Amino acid sequence: MIVRDFNEIVQNDRDRVVSDAHWTSVRLLLAEDGMGFSFHITFLEAGSEHTFEYKNHFESVYCVQGAGSITDLATGETHHIKPGVMYALNEHDRHVLRADEELVMACVFNPPVTGDEVHREDGSYAAPEEVDA
Ligand code: 9YT
Image 1 (tube, rainbow, N blue to C red):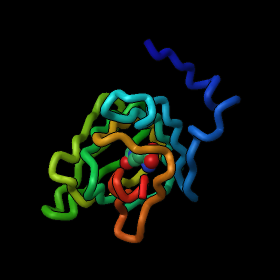
Image 2: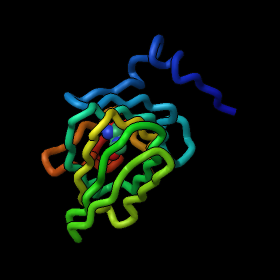
Image 3: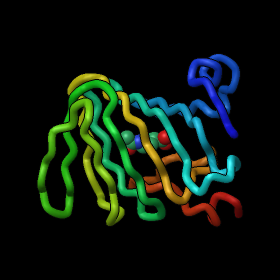
Image 4: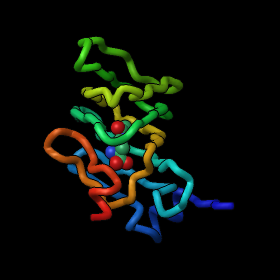
């Protein structure tokens, strides 16, 4: 069994805390944990806007706290994000995520991220085989 404490990771396991200019993510589970998915708690700064397209991953996201919106760039459809709302990028959907207030999101990635990914220009993370290469 794996048991981890978010606060312990933040204090003592900085390798599992990843930040970009406007978001921070605490990776509770990574590829190395062998679960077949990774599990992150991600904080998106109030007022920030992000264009992502996880071409190599499926991602599911559950809003724990905050307010914002997500626009599906294929359809133009925008959905409100608030606590209790989940979205799943089952078609690797290119999207814009906006945080009107700071968003706290629980995120699952399949395949799991390894911990070394950074967003590329196209908003994706590299496929696991590219990260390992
Ligand atoms: C909400 C969202 O899209 N999170 C993406 C994951 C986060 N950027 C991370 O952990 O890398």
